[in-house]
Length: 150
Image 1 (tube, rainbow, N blue to C red):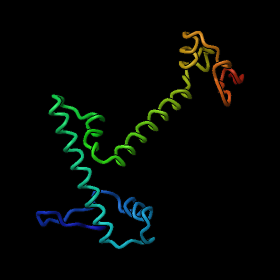
Image 2: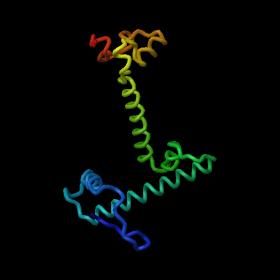
Image 3: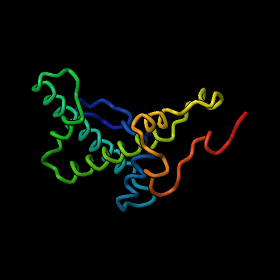
Image 4: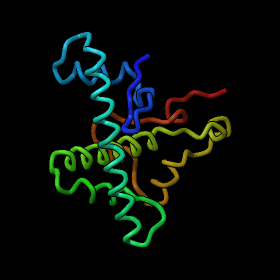
């Protein structure tokens, strides 16, 4: 196990898993087996970045009069670095997209046996939309549509 020495001279274990840091170094073009000192240095750099960014976001939240830090506070903390801010925006957008897609495929297990409509179908029915007319691409079908029954 790698240890590092903090500013006070005490030995500390690495903050992040060694394998993750190794993979990060490989992704940026380092050797297959990077030196232990290189991994320790990357651990220090990443830890320091996270601490500083979190502290700046927390200061913004306090200045705004909030006890909790929001995503917008982190966006504000990264505002001076367009690459990091752009990547953060991209990841947040991807997260929202994945959440919506997961929600579309959630099946209410109790409704399957009773033949009730799923939540997604109920919402569509309330809006008065026809499922086949609105969807583009592959047709999504629920368990009831396919004909699986007990």
